Image 1 (tube, rainbow, N blue to C red):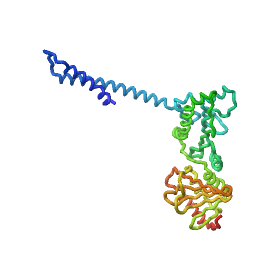
Image 2: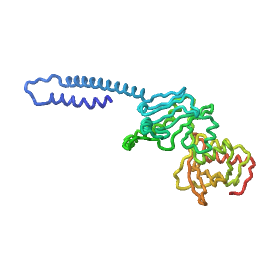
Image 3: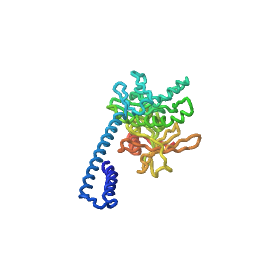
Image 4: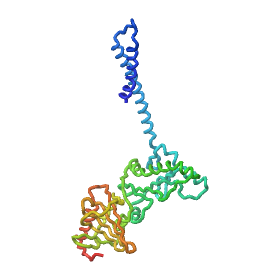
Length: 350
């Protein structure tokens, strides 16, 4: 920054001195050592600029430090901390229940929506609700993973098996009294929701003993969870080597769990299935099959084939593992070989 300021100011000063020294000739006007005079003035100007730049830097550093100190407001509930950007604090209502039967630690609402709902004397449940943070025990989470978890995201766990969940609405809770206010305040609502999306990671950062945990909740997730935690899914595994194998009394929980914990499944935009062989998991009662591909470029792609009213519909998923030493295909291959090792008999294909 100093170099820029000096380069911007010194040429003007030198230009002024140059004009004074080299302007209209004046008879009998002596000039004593103009080079020395120019050097002295240049040094003086440079020192002034340096001091000014230093003062500006000091002020900027102070402003930055002040902004950093005000960047987040720490909201406390018992030993837990929720970080809220200072700029948003007055826009929010943050509840911190002391003993909530549902384990809720923080519930966050947009204040303007709450006020608008009150002004209309309406009955809009959860007006302005952005999200809540709560805790649940391991068994409750296992049960929930087996079903649709819309509006609930498991995001962290402790060594003791306490899970942390972000609850959020599945509909819009943005409320205003006038339509013009909706247009005017939509950007604010969007910014608050963008911040809400970052809360799980900052919550793990700010609270000791939490490990970030990722889950998705597709139907594939639900089938895998039911196999791991309930053992109530009638399924078969099929590959070219041994054919179709029906599960028996073998313990496949380790394989199903590795396909659940630290894995997220998202829709994949691919035009066709990878070439080559695959492991197929079929759930005959639901007329659905999942294919896990061997091809190197497709080892984390899964094809879902679902039969509905005599028509077959295909959807592709991509598995993302937090531990990249695993691939979906390798786990499913080990799972298939577990059935083989337990002398599971091959059965005719469905």
